[in-house]
Image (cartoon, rainbow, N blue to C red):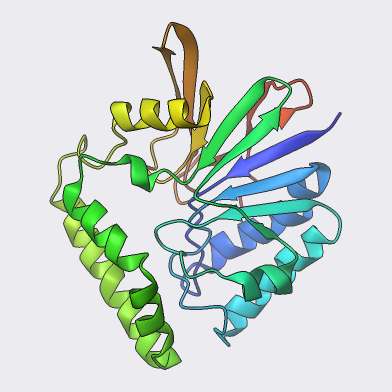
Length: 243
């Protein structure tokens, strides 16, 4: 039986050795048993560019390349790793997906996305997101030295954490109207996303038809999991190996 796996929000970094080891074991076990792996953003806690010379960056690239030689691997940008580029894709053999991608499944089309663009009630974040995703910002960052980019990434993580802590929980979640508009735009009644770190399955009615929104777990909490879809379109949790 063929199977696809969906994960997001791992937030790997040189500061998370146990988490990195957990991801390595996942790639060597459960991911090898699947036909395809979809990483829906924030694989990294911060990605400073494909030219990152660190041993950490090299190790993750090698691990993904080892899997992609046997299985299909797809990655979407998250709000922490939007600088992932074509060089990374070429080195690892993965396929970079657009921000919103419709996957055709036996259960019907499914919209895959990281999900941060759906948090429209957080207007400050959306303004910052627009600036950070602009070609001008990318050019600015990539013109910096590696140490300067590392310092910039640390500053942005600190500012993001402070901003999130000061906001009400409902502000930082997805907006239902934005969810429905995205589903209508892509003619789907099923969505899978990450970003919010609030795993669950939300069922509702969209234009008179049943619809559902599946939210993936982050990997920093106990009980993290991947979502697995079999060749009949059945979706179920799969526990992630722990240290």
